[in-house]
Image 1 (cartoon, rainbow, N blue to C red):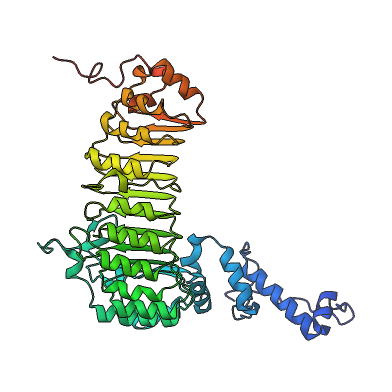
Image 2: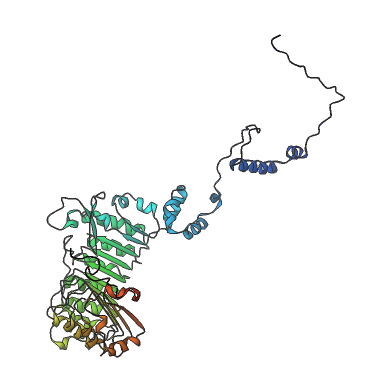
Amino acid sequence: MPFSAEIPEVPSPQTVKKRFPSWSKLWVKNAKKPLKHVVLTMQVQSLSSPAIKSPKTPKTLAPTLPNFDPTLSLPDPILLKILSKLPDSQRNSNSLVCKRWLNLQGRLFRSVKLLDWKFIESGRLVIRFPNLTRVDLVPGCLVTPQNSAILLSHRVVSVHIESGFSKKWKLCEDCLLPAKLIDRGLKLLASSYPNLRKLSVIGTSELGLLNVGEECSTLQELELHKCNDDVLRGIAACTNLQVLRLVGKVDGFYSSVVSDIGLTIMAQGCKRLVKLELNGCEGSFDGIKAIGQCCQMLEEFTICDHRMDGGWLAGLSYFENLKTLRFQSCKRIDPSPGPDDYLVCCQALERLHLQKCQVRDKKSLRALFMVCGAVREMVFQDCWGLDNDMFSLASTCRRVELLSLEGCSLLTTEGLASVILSWKELQSLGVVSCKNIKDSEVSPSLSTLFSVFKELKWRPDTKSLLPSSIAGIGMGKKGGKFFKRM
């Protein structure tokens, strides 16, 4: 025989012992359905967890159950509260979980900047974000190449442009949507968001503003770009407006005219204004006077790059409750302020800020300090022409408690000392990046004054930032140690 095999010996029935089932099998066999479900769930969970595979254990097929979402049992209000507690960085990832989370996450958004006008025309904006209170429509009103790598940015507006842009230097006018299309979108927006609080739009007409004012009674903040006198006729419907920003002309982007007529219409319709900003607007004494007489609650007034006629500065005397006056990027203050009898001091004015302005005209700067003689806070930031003679005019403001100077390169230590030593109520001083103010020129009387200040920020130049441990080693000199002649 090619092979041999041994026949195993069959045990007799008497020798075979009866094997009783284990207690675990009897328990599972007699268990009720709820217990079987619990055991089965535990087995599925244990199989789903990683475990060490044994070669001796035979592979068995485990029953599969559908994935169970525990958030399905939560009502929408509770799940909304949970999602609102998560950080903003997780909003995008949370909206990708499921359609329900996408809708709930959209209900948490309150502010949106529109980039594509089709998103509002199709109604997807309302479906996706039903509870918006702040909407910026300016980017969506401009048809620009979004994939362009060239971004032309201004303090007011930014536009993507191509390499062959228009030579007229009015980029926004070339790519602006028609006014009828913008008005239609504003009507849909106003009817969908009656609780709208803030709106930014460009290129709308009087009809668009009327729709917003009639539907959105709670509108408090409005920003209008490329507005003119005709557009401002519709602003009378916004009766509860408190913050208003009017942008008339921006060089290189768009051009429109806001004159005394528009300022008077705006003042008569918006009597509850608290903050007002005029950017690139025209006007004169009559328009500023109308604002002061009608908007008696106005506390903050900002003027940017104005085109106003001479004599407008005297209209500030009609602002009874004005507390903050700001000038930004103004090439001039007032070329012809008029006689001193018309320059009445604003007693309620507390803060005067000038940022990136030209103060080369001594007559206009003197008139400004006369109107602002009661200010307690004075700030100059990157102003051209502020030398010792110009700054000496500020000595008429004797109630100044805080002075901040930044980027005033023409002002010297002597000019600074001649003014602040005459201010008896000065408590805080900040001097940053004023290269002609030297540490070595500080007099004993000036250093004594510094010692009693509540707050002192003294960094007139970069050398003042060097620690005392490296002083005297030659750092900061022009090639004293590192560059030598060969």
